[in-house]
Each structure stands twice: as C-alpha cells, then as structure tokens.
Length: 602
Figure 1: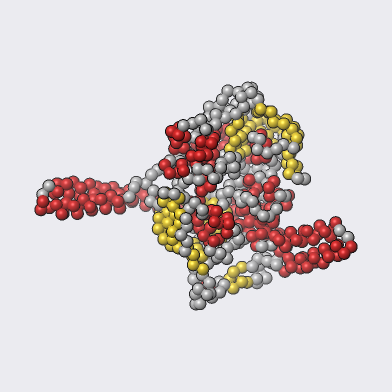
Figure 2 (figure 1 turned 90 degrees about the vertical axis):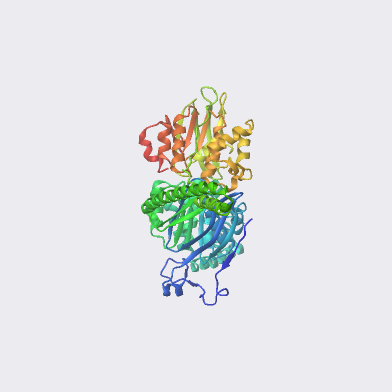
C-alpha cells in the first residue's frame, strides 16, 4: 500500500512561479532541447528537483526509513551508502517510481506500469514533490520492452524511436517495391526524413551511438534484437538510455555492473562533469571517492539517512567521529538510567516517596528508549560451496555447439570437456556468447547444433547473472525450499541466516530484493544443491567488498569443477584455473597470468 502525496509544481498550482521555458537555442547539439528555468537562474536560486518530507518506508513489518526529509538539487552528486539490506535499492526505487507516477516531466526512463510494479510491495507514507526530470537505472535490465533493438530503446527516451523505425520501413519499401507503391514510399521517406531532421534526430542518434560506444556497445550490438543481447549488454543499453535522456537528476543503482575498465573510467569522467545532479548506489569506493560531493548514509539500526555534505574521504572521518560520539552518549544514558532505577527501587518502599520513585523509573525507561539500540557491525554472508557429489572422470562434455539468433551467429563448432574438479575461465568481449554458453550447458536454451553430454553422476549448479533462477513471485524461503525440497524448515532457516536472511526477511518476495540480496539468495540455493559442476556467471556482481571476499574464499576452497564467467580479476585468481576458453572462436589454452589483463577488458 502506498499513501501518496504528490504536489505538481506548475503555473496553475502557483501563479507566482513562472512556467518553465522550453528552449532549443541551436547552440547545443540539434534536437537536444532543454528546460530553462530562467527566472530562477536570474535570482540565483537553487533548483531543487526532488523534495521528500516525512518519508517513511517499510517492507512488511520492517522499518527501513523513519520520518526522513530529503532534498535533491541540480549539482548535488550524492553517494547513497549503507550496509547490506539496509534499504538503499528500495529507497531509490521508491523515489524513481513516485516521480514517474506523479508525471513530473519524467525523462521517460520509467513507464507508469513499471513504476507501479516497483512499489507494489513497499509501504510508504510522506510527501514527495518534484520539479524536474529524473532518469532511473535499475540493477536489473528492463524486460518485455517494446523496442526491437538497442538503438531504438535508447532513442525512445526522447520519443525519437518511432520516427526512426518509420524511416527504416520506408527505406525498405523503396528498395523492395516498384511503381505507385514505391512512389508513395519515396514521398513518405522524404516527409519523415524532413521531420526527423527538424527534431534533431540524426544528431541525437549520433550522440546516442557515441554514449553507447563509450559504454562498450558497438553498432552491431545496438542494431541486433534486444532479446539476443547478453544481460551485460542489456544493462549497458539501459545505462546509455538513462545518460542519453539528460535528466535533471540521475538515480543510478550499481551503474558499474557489467562495465569493463575503460567504460568505468569514461562513466567516472561523465559523472564528474554532469550538469545535473545524481544519487548513486555503488560498491565501488573508488568511484565514490572520485565523483561525489555528498554522502547519505542509511543507518539500518536507526532507520535514518544521515546526510553528510562532504566528499568521500571527509565523510569517512566524520562518520567515525559521529559513531564514537553516539556510543559515548548511549553509554552515559544507560548509566544514568541504571542509577535512576536503583534510586527509584530504594524509594518505592517508602509511601511518602512512592510518587517520586515512579517518576524516576519512568525517566529511566525514557532514557533507555532515547539511547536506542547499539549500532550493529555489518554482517557478512558465510558462504561455502557444497561438497560435490561423486561423479565420473568427465562429468560434462560438449561437442560441436552452435548457436545463432536469427542471422546473427554467436558461435559454432565449439567443443568443451569439463573434467572432475577442473577449473575453466571463459573470456570474450561483450556479446561473444559467454552467458549463452552457460545457458546452453545448463539446458536453458536450445542448441542449433551439437550436443551436451552429461557424464556419470553429473549434478549442475547454475548461478545466473540476472538471477533468473529465482522466482520473483515466491518468497525468499519458498525459493530455498524449491531448490532443496528435502530440507526441513530448521535447516533452511539456518542456511538463510548464514546468508543474512533472518526473521521477516525470509518471507519477503524475491521481487523486492536488491541486487545484492538476490545474489546472496541465488548463492544460498547453490549451497544446498550438492553440485559437482558449477556454472557461475558474474557471481561477484552487486556484492559489497566483504561478501565478495567470502565468494573468493569459497571459490578457492571448492573441490568440484567450475566454469566461470567474470569481469573480476580477483575471482579468477581465487579460482586458480587450469584452462581458459576464448569466445567466440572457441579456442582453448592453458591458463597463464598473461590472460589476467583481458579479464577486465572482456
């Protein structure tokens, strides 16, 4: 249930506030219209894009944010941080969805249906006002989108995709028809081309292509069907789409996921010079250090967002001082409460002092309540991959694998033999077929040619980078019992506790989990699988540094076979692979540390 108060800031609501002026000055790139708030600029006032008052956020019985006020202005570069499961992703979803549902000149990055779906399981009270456009990048790529290819998906955020598609259809008819039909197609093409030029469409398309290129998407990837792109490529399309929209405020949830080293450097420079504001959730402390001028810390113990108008390094020092001060204040309050209790208990026996004694005891209770709970140290999931079931010498063998999507060939004639306990890393550029290979080996997608031959005793465990092994309609607990139906409730709850799902968290729908929580749940299902061959697709994405270290240790200790796809050099080093498979050619080689340089670049 969402109790929603959205105040539209418009001329009819406030006659003293001027209507925003839509400018197309010609000094900027053609088609790149901007909203100019000349009146406010003339007065030198700050342009507040989002204002949240008395914001309270809950999921089920759990309070995430209590009566908090937030303001996001253009020029604010904010890092939103907090421990695992504190509610960072939920807070971002909520703000993005409320802006979209309020129809405040949204950048178009969220439809109303998408926005409503984001907050279906969130209870919210408070008031949100918005006076500008907002672009939102979710941790999970959009699914079921209308556009057929990547460039159309990006262009759609400025409502240019339909004209572009109409031009392409007219071009096709011009080349495949004759006579009157062809003449009509030529006439239609000329009209559409003139309209597209007037809208600045060609310049905008060039700009969109350049942003996508900087994020590691080439023209082939942008023009092929969206359904054929890997999860990493789709995420890059969504990031390019949000950046291309040029909103007043960007809301970015783990924007570096699936980006190679060069793309991260480009994104860093983009954010440093971005004219609008942004709020970013990321586990990359280097990116926070290089880009933010404010840090918001979501304290899960107190359900508040502490707002530091400081850069990253200064924030770390100030927060350490604040936590030390709160510990001292809490200890002093508890000591005073204990003294009042003791004095009150002594006085209760005397009738003449009974009233004073009760007042002392009540004051002691108030002091304990005001002191609050002690800030808990951040917990880390305790991960150990399963002891592998016994199997034959070659538990998995693939021969002559081929896969295409329409006319696009991913790879062909690929052979791969996985020996018992062997460790293999798969390298290749984005779109080379790394995720496709794992899906084929797991039987999720159908082969065009070749065969996957299971050996004696094979038990596969698959970690999917987009968490498609999880059922979003099921709760955390139900997903675990589906993965291990033979386990009793006590065993399931114990394992979930090891992965930081305790109490009410076990009954949250998987659809409301953050990317990090989904990663932990997917890994928990692997732990109970007894798998002797693990297929792991970017298993360290969305994880904080401490949880990532747990993954690396688990990889180092696992005795079964592993086929690993990753951009994380640390994960490769922890695996200590014997072989490397290079896609799309399917060449195999013995592992050498010389290949480490390719890991971040592929």
